[in-house]
View: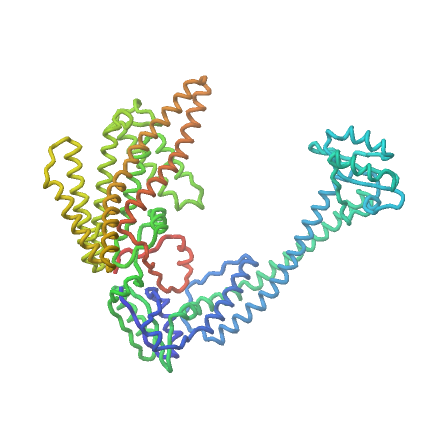
Length: 638
């Protein structure tokens, strides 16, 4: 990867931006070293116009349900005046469309309100009375409309009659009675309030629109609703007509914005002073000649293209170029959740994919349930098709280990194991898991050493607790531990296998720390202890590979034990449901456990994840729109 500075005449800056985007290899990034020398930002106003026009175009396309495509635009410079005209025209179109949309929104609100009123009116349809009389308080008549629990209705009827009132039930629904209570005003009103409250009476407000007999009110509401529906249809037809009439113009305006986009997006990078303009960014080494030829072909006036290797202090700014097959997309996303590989940092995607599938299969090894996962991957709906490779590969890995284990739906006696039956030999499974952990940690440590050498951090690579000295501590500890476990004699020199590299690590920690003696000693001891503890804990963490393989078989045994207690029909129902539950729940738990091992026992050792993804400036084309869903990331680190 090369740090590139392109110097052009100020008048050529828009054309240069267009050529950079058309070439598709220039990743813009400001260079703080030149910002102070070139204080002018040349395309700020241009970007404001572009963003305004782009926002309006997006809103119009959403309102008109259009999706204009860029096609293969003819390269031409969009002047600021032309962009301003496009913005103004889009503003006019949007104001017209927004007025229509606002009208449709108001009509939709009115439609919902009328439908709600009609629904409410259903409750009063049994009343053969002008509903307006029930809304207004009368001088000599006290009328109340409300609900009471149906169970309280008999007692309430008796109580209100004693107070000189009558009660009429006009609807009973879901244990609730809708009633009208009527009687003389000012007589026994206080007593009635107590009775109603004791019965759980809740007043029901009659909408103000209900001012006539329910039949007449319903007719009026339906007439108003039909008028609103007709108005909405008319406005929608007008909106569709405007969309058809504007489609060609919007396509042309979209083409203008496509050509204006590169110069607008470079507003933070493009600097100038006087008659000069400067672009700063990154270009892969192998693409420099192509970019040079593109600029020579497209620019009339002289230009200067300067490229150099990145300085050590720029390592965090250099974009990483990574590329993988689209089948690895689910695993790329899992790696991306942790971070992006930095410049000259090992890309762990392939290692992550292989180790993830191996550990998943080891913990969830089952020929039958693995096939269920694979079939589920094949049956995923189209919108989730990018997850299909993960399900298929995990299912195949589970089937492979199930074949090695001789496990079919958790049963280990239906198929002769090619390797080992977990429940029959748990000690051997624990040993295999332990050695898998040792191999994984040693590989992670080796990658750490390689990364630090590539980054010029030789001391860390040799003397750090996660470098070569740390690996020596780990290997020495494993050797001494194996002797003790096999009850072989231990000698004093065996301790030196751990103590010598530990002393090297502690010495390096002390050299690296610039605090006072007491504080330095405390920090060194704590960091050394943390190094030893991390190696031990990380290794033991891999025993879960065996634990979950045993747990898987144990769950299947439990399912078949429950099934044996059922009748013939219940047996198969229990077996089917049990296997589905095991596949879904345990499969998800195992996937989470594998991620934990990958992130905390692997990535935390060698992968910083602080890199910057290579994102070259590109000119939008139809072919690119059709492939934006595909994973396109550069592979090698230039």
